[in-house]
Amino acid sequence: MFSRILYPFDMRKASLNVKPYILKLKEAGCREVHILYVLLPSEWGLLAKEEYDSKEKIEALRGALDEGYVDALLRRFEKMKELAEEFESKGIKARVLMIPGELDEVIAEYAEKNGIELVALGITSESLSFFRVGKLLDVIKAVDKPILIVKTPEEEGDEEV
Amino acid sequence: MPLFEKTLYATDFSPLAEVALDYVKKLKEAGEKEVVIVHVVDDLSVELPEGADLLKEKELYKVLPEVDQEYVMSIIERLEAVKDILEENGLSAKIFLRYGNIPEQIVSVAREEKVKLIVMGAHGKGLLTEILLGSVSTDVIRKADCPVLIVKKREE
Ligand SMILES: Nc1ncnc2c1ncn2[C@@H]1O[C@H](COP(=O)(O)OP(=O)(O)OP(=O)(O)O)[C@@H](O)[C@H]1O
Ligand SMILES: [Mg+2]
Image 1 (cartoon, each protein chain N blue to C red):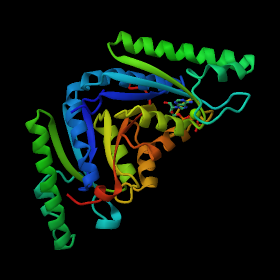
Image 2: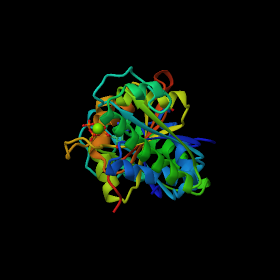
Image 3: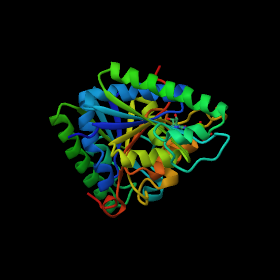
């Protein structure tokens, strides 16, 4: 029921607060976590719709994207890698990747294709950042799997980690 | 960390709420000890005060017309049946039957009981079969202060 968890991560405190729940779910069978950053079209323009799951693939975007953007992506990727290591050290296999597209579509499609059993979302109370209320509800509607929603009070939740 | 120690299970006795019960049982492996089972009634033939406790306030019960009394009795039986199932699974459980606004009552029991997680279906008994997210789940997501686990269709 919880063996493969999708963890959409947006670099905010609110999404980091989901981590202890996933770690705890290891006791109820979590074996694998997929840490996913969705590259929103509004931020990055049009990118080829593939899975950017290595530094090399992100490096290859230089030329297509502004240098500063690519550097920022690499920093985020590093941060996600650190998170992945933490899961690995606790015995949960972790995959890190970035996919361009709309939040709801990317998450729903990835969950469907990869045998995900639970999607774990961290949001701020007012959801003013990544997962705005409307957007969050779209994600929940689009996804076919159980969804764990962990809220963080607004003041802290929007901080970048 | 006691992240799942005490949970709230909201049920309208629909098939999807029953699927949600499987998750409630499963969470025992992640440290769950106690489950608060909640049902809210909003469709009696007389108006009762918001938040009225239909288990404890016996006088209220007496003012209800007979059809309502029977209806409430049948719900209590169903709640007791869920409680039995959870206890058979080694969890401690208690039931709540409230009158009023459904999501508001679910959230307020969650607060009073200081639960760590609410478990519920994405939809329920509503007549629109194609609905993806019911009004009760939507409102609980908006208003709850604790994490919420929304269960979708049964796993194949
Ligand atoms: N009266 C209730 N008491 C307790 N929990 C409820 C009640 N009604 C719904 N729920 C919980 O909320 C979940 C979603 O049900 P919801 O009522 O939101 O969907 P719906 O009935 O399909 O749509 P709507 O009621 O908006 O027409 C249910 O699976 C159940 O867990
Ligand atoms: Mg309903």
